[in-house]
Amino acid sequence: MAAGYKAVEPLEYYRKFLKQNCRPDGRDLSEFRTTTINVGSITTADGSALVKLGNCTVICGIKAEFANPPSDAPNKGYIVPNVDLTPLCSSRFRPGPPGEEAQVASQFVADVIENSQIIQREDLCIASGKLVWVLYCDLVCLDYDGNLLDACICALVAALRNVQLPSVKISEETGLAQVQLASKSPLNILKQPVSTSFAVFEDTYIIVDPTEEEESLATGLLTVVTEEDGKLCTIRKPGGSSLSAEKLQECISRAFSRHKEVQALLNEVLLSVKTQ
Image 1 (cartoon, one colour):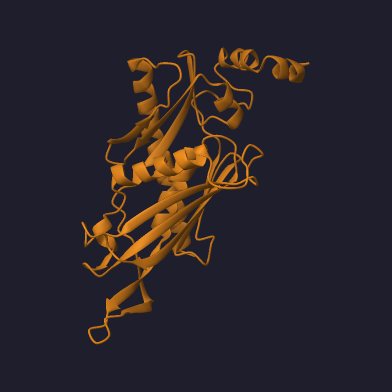
Image 2 (cartoon, one colour):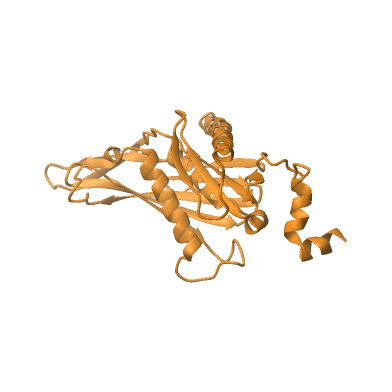
């Protein structure tokens, strides 16, 4: 009976739960799904991480390559993110060029990298005007179940903290790069942004970490990206129902609390990897 009612009136079905300050999966409105982080799972990458938010699963692999610096910034390297949503992660995606959602997610990640200054691009310079590092950050969704942006940012930060780059010198005689694989060092991570997403139901109910089904029923979506120094990095609200100043502040406060939770989890995971 409940399954039939949900199929016919899915929004009304959800409202009955929201009125009780809970959701059909048993979570309360401000509760995240179980979050797990694994780092270093791709041995062929220079840094990698796999993040799961409930069923939503994203893996990030980072590959470092040599490149010529931009002409207007001879001492800066590049960070190039790309989000891939394949048919394997959900039947809603099709083979071929990146769809709109993948492009929007890639641009979102790029904006967070730029706004938060996760790392200084100057730190990717090998020889000013001659050679820099370019970090290709490939984020692949393995299982799509809502809240893609939070999973992507978490996987990106975890993978960047896992990166080990070899020492490189330019030979004075040949002018070629000499790579010393035996001498590797981590990136200098300056900021660790955390993304916290919300689904809005007619400005009455706001839930965190929405599933794919909840996103499809919501009348608005909101993503707040915070930094560890108590600053806001990005607020993204792609249309939908309006949000009062009071409700927005509640979301921002929850985002800062979430930042502490994710950072503590990430630090714990990275510490356990070092001690292995």
